[in-house]
Structure formats: C-alpha cells, structure tokens
Image 1 (cartoon, one colour):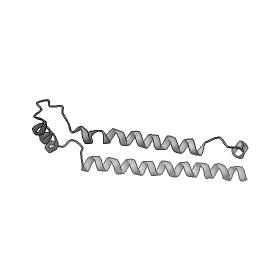
Image 2 (tube, rainbow, N blue to C red):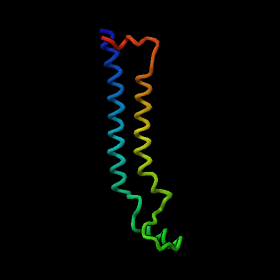
Image 3 (cartoon, rainbow, N blue to C red):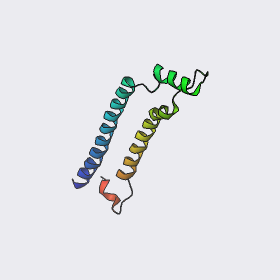
Length: 96
C-alpha cells in the first residue's frame, strides 16, 4: 500500500507540473495574440531607424522571445522529470 501511495504522489507531482505548463502555454498564446512581436508599426520604425530596404527585417531584439519561451518550457519539464525520476537509494519503493 505504501508503494502505491509513493507512486501516486510521484504522478500527482508530475500531473501538477503538466497542468502548470498547460496554463503557462495558454497564457503565452494569449500574450502572442494580444501583443504580436512584429507589428506593422515596429517594422516601420526599424526600417526607418536602420534605413533598411529589406522587407524581412524585423526587430530582432524581441523576435527571439517567442521561440525561446517554448524551449524554456520544454527544458523546465525535462528538469521536473529528471528531479522526479532521479535515482534514489531505495529504488524498490515504486515496485509492485
């Protein structure tokens, strides 16, 4: 019975971390919709500032944030998995 409770606690912590990551993902998607990283005004200001004629120029100072969030979120989930399933001195606590 204790082994089942240890497993349940482990999976409960993992489920909570997945729920937090889902909430963060939904919040980030909402942020992307409300505040897009490359608005027309920002592109115009960058082109005027740098006198750039390249239509693909974008404000690189903020453009990296969108993919970086997803990389950081997946890295955080990997860290949580590594911590939860780290080797212990008593590996038999999760066996049936």
